[in-house]
Amino acid sequence: MPDPGTLLRSRAYVRLLALAAVIGAPISALAYGYLKVVQQAQRGIFQHLPGTLGFGSVPAWWPLPWLALSGALTALAIARLPGTGGHSPADGFHPAGTVAPIDLPGILLASLATLCLGAVLGPEAPLVLLGSGLGALATRLVARDAPDQAVAAIAAAGSFAAIGALMGSPLLAAFLLLEAAGLGGAMVGVVLLPGLLAAGIGSLVFVGLNSLTGFGELSLALPDLPPIGHPTATWFLYAFGFGLLLPVAGVAIFAAAKAVRAHARRRMSLALPLLGLLIGGLAVGFGQVTGRPATDVLFSGQTALPGLVGGASSWSVGALCALLAAKGIAYALSLSGFRGGPIFPAMYLGAAAGILASRLPGLPLVPAVAMGIGAMSATMLGLPLTSALLATVLLGADGTDVLPVVIVAVVVSHVATAHLTPRAEPAPASPGAAHPPIGVMRAPRPPSSMGGCAPPASTIPPR
Image (cartoon, rainbow, N blue to C red; front, top):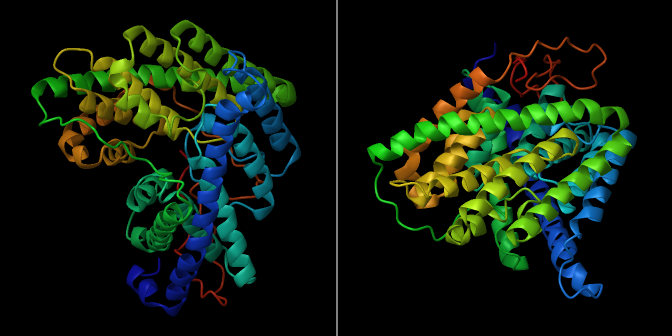
């Protein structure tokens, strides 16, 4: 194995860092535009369009046709375009290997149809895939004879750049992708550095575009939280409760998603519109029962999360239970066939569970929300370290105070999930696969103009 220090000092590695910095800015700008398109489409379709068409208010049935259209367009992208629209989110969050540029249109169409029209998934997984494909494309355009390892390194940097600001911190984004890929050992720094550089530049791009466009923040944050004090023994007891109960819900969501997916795959063009109608029906039913907007059930919950926590006192216990049931089922149905990421719906459900638990004695709102987010994320992502960071970074200055109890909730949740999840039989390798398995880097090729500067081959089994 090459010495990491030798690689860091090589000219080829410096050129790799320079290319990562160069591609970070445009990919981040495209990611910013992608997020803005999703945000504006959601608002336009579900808030402004009814009035434009002459409705005095949003009709109760409004989500139904849009969710059916979402299913039809997603199925079209999966069945007719290369790349199957990206990976199935029912398998959890995994950073893919290098995405072929030819797969980008299908990933883009499937994810926009999913996210813009109301399915309960987030933008992080499509951004990772789109960033990877754009990074690979940029590398091939700059150096056609670049070795596969160099292409893989810049593709990974493209993924970092695409989600660096979305996660609230370039470091959190880097940590997420690093833990999800299962990388470790002496080469971690060599692998991480190009992506971290691209993510940092991407965050600067987001800040600049926010200032120029006036669109405001598109990244994760919970502002204006009440003071919480210091952890108590009661908080630690509640942390065990979160860690034991939320995995039951999370494992059930995944089990339902995979069961539905097994049937939906047979007739995708028919199944996904029907699933969309079911998701829309859940949203309509929730709105009719609670009197709250049906959109509380739809979408990833990323932009709605601050309002959910900030307006926690306005939610009754019954409405919170209805929200958890409707959004949890809609989440499972979305995971089964649509294309998007599982992170933000998991955080939203965890926050809602935390708000519900905060009605119990001795548990303030902020630590309850933090423990709920951490425990649910640990179950749905299988990434305990990232889950603890997600909950604490989201809370800003309050994150430090709640970190000890979040860690307890996350660890208990991760262990409980392992006990609740049946062991999966290892899938046989596909000899005709177009791309390497997740976390697998191709064997090194002889140095070329890129100098063979990417890390050495290593095989990490898929999660």
